[in-house]
Length: 260
Image 1 (spheres, helix red, strand yellow):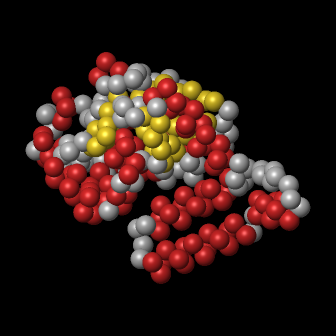
Image 2: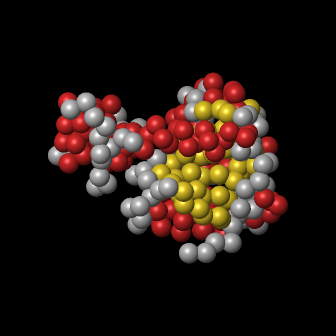
């Protein structure tokens, strides 16, 4: 599978997806969104991939936003379709049953911030800057920013950022819960590797069930979410991975999980 705007590299079961338009600060144009969709679909069908990392080429930007030249040509109907298309691709990424980490190496603005938020976890360089500045263009976020930002940082703080269009440096982003880890620029890839190492030794089925429970449960009331959790707990209890995990605990050894 070849791409014009993405670079795909596999490293020991981790697929690194790099948005590769450094001359445009990795801005998301329509073609890149389509390529992301193809790349995510390929992961869905590839059991050899344990985790995914999304990043941007170069040292200036993760993804600096949407391609503004494309936005100016949109009428209201086309604009809605544009937003729905990007939302569908980001939702597809978010619903992967394996951990997805954003490695934020610079500007993550507009659509770039929305892409990072669609990932399950976020590791940011100290050079990273995140934000949803769409109001400064007379727009609102269209790829899920108004929905994911309050889920991550809370309603009041999200509204302050959305209404002001203020950009947030990495340390503040970590303090408010927008990113999980902040590291020095030269340590970004190693920090991602360390985070994934703390995750990948656990039961693969259990990881997927956790992602499903949180991802779907946030859209439910507490009672329905707890019922979903109980159902998924039962799925895990019926698995060979649970048998191996509990046996390993009782035998004081490291579990040897097999993929489902």
